[in-house]
Structure formats: C-alpha cells, structure tokens
Image (tube, rainbow, N blue to C red):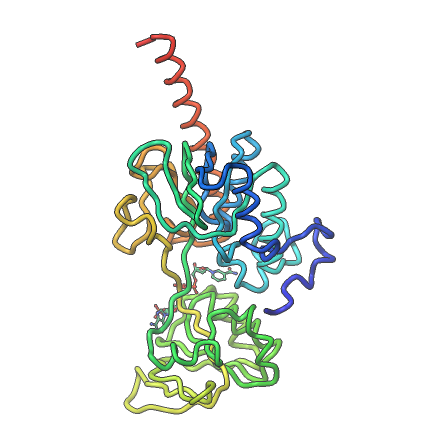
Amino acid sequence: MSDDTSTKSKSPLAGLSLTFLAPAPDAVTASVATEKTSGEPVSARVVIVGSGPAGLTAAIYTARANLQPIVIGGVVGGGQLMITSEVENYPGFPNGIQGPELMGLFKAQAERFGAKIIDADVDRVDLSSRPFRLWAGGIEYRADAVIVATGAEALWLGLDSETRLRGRGVSACATCDGFFFRDKEIAVVGGGDSALEEALYLTHFASMVHVIHRRAGFRGSKIMQARAASHPKIELHLNRTIEEVLGEDHVEALRLGKTDEPGEERLAVQGLFVAIGHRPNVAVFQGWLESDDKGYLRTEGATTASNIEGVFVAGDVDDHRYRQAVTAAGEGCRAAIDAERWLEEQAAIGKQATAGIA
Ligand code: NDP
C-alpha cells in the first residue's frame, strides 16, 4: 500500500487513529460477540451496512440521535475513497486531502458518538419481518431499521489476460499500487474522472503514463482533461481499445485495437491501471430490494426509503448520476433522518396500541 496517511500532520484530528485496518477484523467482531453469549444475536435500533461516506455519515447522525448504530462496514472498510488519492472537492479541505485520511476522519467522528464499526461483510439478510436479520462474520444482527450504504465497486475490462496478470502489473487501485511503478512506463484505461485523476496521480511515480480511451471525447471534467492533456508525463491514446495484456509473469505490453482506422498497435508498458467505472454492491439484497435497469437500488419519491418499510438506502448504491463523496455523505444524512423519524413513528404507534387508542 502507498503511504496515503503521509499528510496526517495537516489533519485537524492529527494524533487519532485514522486507519481502517486496525484492529484486525476478528478482534472487532469478537469484541461485539463478547457483549452477548456466544451464538446469541446482537440487537440494535439501526444497523448500517457499508462504511463509505454514506454509511459513516448515517452512523454519525444516528449515533448523535442516541440510536447506537452498528455499522457492518465490510472486511475492507471505507469505500471507494480508500482507493482514491487526492480529493480536492470535498468541502472543508481547501488544500485537498488523501481519500483514506478523509475516511479515517469520518470513522473517528462516528466512533466519537458511539457508533460501533464491525469489519465484516454481510453474507445474508432476511428482511421478511421486523426486526430485520443480517448475518456477518458468523454473527446474527437484528435491527429495527436498516440503512443500506454498500456503494459500488470498480469494473474490469473482462479480458482473460487482464485477470491472469492482476497483481502482476494490472491493478484498479493507483493509490495502493502506484508506488511499485517508480520510473516505469504504465497505462491507464478509461475516459472518466477516475482515469484522469489516476493518470495524474501516477505521474508522481511513473516515467510516462499512457491514457487509453475508446472514444475521441473524454467523459471526465474539463479541468481534469486540461491537466492531463498538458502534463509532460501523460500521453493520450484516443480511439484505442485494449485487446490483450501481454506478458508471461508480469505486464510487458498492451495490444491495442483502433476504433477510428483499421489495424492494431503494441504499446510497451509495465503496468495497467483499469479505471472504467463501477457496479453497485447489491448482491446480498437481491430478491429483497428493488433495483433500476442499471442495477442501482431504487428509493421511494424524494426520500431514502426502499420498497421495504424500515429499510433505507444511501450513497453510490442508488446513485449512478452524481457518485461523489459529498453527495453520498448527504444521502447518509438523509437516510439517518428518515430512519430516525420512522423509528419515532413506530414507537408512537406502539404506545397508542398499548394504551388502546385506535
Ligand atoms: P465514468 O463512468 O464516469 O467513466 C468510465 C469511463 O470508462 C468512460 O470514459 C467509459 O468510456 C470507459 N469505459 C467503460 N467501460 C469500458 C470498457 N469496457 N472498455 C474501455 N473503456 C470503458 O466512471 P468514473 O469512475 O471515471 O467516474 C464515476 C463518477 O465519479 C463520475 O461522476 C466522476 O465525475 C466521479 N469522480 C470524481 C472524482 C473527483 O472529482 N475527484 C474522481 C473520480 C470520479 P465511454 O466514455 O466511452 O463510455
């Protein structure tokens, strides 16, 4: 991993533990397990699934509402910003901040108000009745309300050669692996902001970064395009597709197809970073929560409510339009408020029923 927390000294929370990787997943899961007799379910008012900007913002808000949320954050917590380098557009950080450091700050803030963060993946859910049931790390969790903030994950090209050489020069994480390509010639595939941002970041290590995009026009923002186009260490290859990643034990070259003219070409590089977009993480909720035609979860009207009462949705898992850390955080806030109000309504209904009020 690259030293993404090297800017800690600039942090307003310098000195706090900002990492998602400690304590070890088993230790965290065990600490929750010991609160109950082994094998007994762990109950919570709110369980939040996912620990990116949406999940942790929902945790901050529900924790401050005394709902003592449990965040089942994934074995690798923190979401997409953990594999992002410099974040320049998150408000409040005029000099920018490294993605992992930003997520460390979110986590510290949620824990400060009592949110419990579990480093495990949810394997299975049962949303057929309340309390809802979720299983993660061998423990059953029961929740009066659930907030789904599982985000979206990086897409791959789908080439056999890409899969074979993954970890041997092929990567989807410039922040994690850029360091290994010091003074080497590498390529980034994609035409969105991720590809342009990764290319710019990789110029800190590589001797030359080739950006390969299948069309003539970029999808990324104008400012990132201008920066990439004018960078002396970046060369743009437009109307090019990657047909094969060449090399036995490690990446040695790319076989490129041309979309504007016949023929192919070979580009000698020692690394390939794939930055072609994301897929929403919905597998565990399939059959329970409704999705749109792109696979992103649906919400009801202007709220974060899903098709199941008491289950709310926030962040990139329902947003293929904006997909920004700040919009995900905003949605986490909305989901927390929706969940809190819904729980209050349920409590009021329960009290009326107990008092015999029709
Ligand atoms: P995008 O969906 O915006 O871009 C994906 C790119 O990959 C497109 O250019 C697409 O080509 C190309 N692509 C997709 N599939 C393939 C394939 N099979 N082969 C070759 N190329 C392919 O995804 P990003 O991850 O770049 O960005 C997602 C969102 O996050 C955007 O809204 C972006 O603005 C935002 N973002 C913001 C950042 C920031 O502000 N710091 C940093 C990173 C992302 P085509 O254009 O032809 O469809």
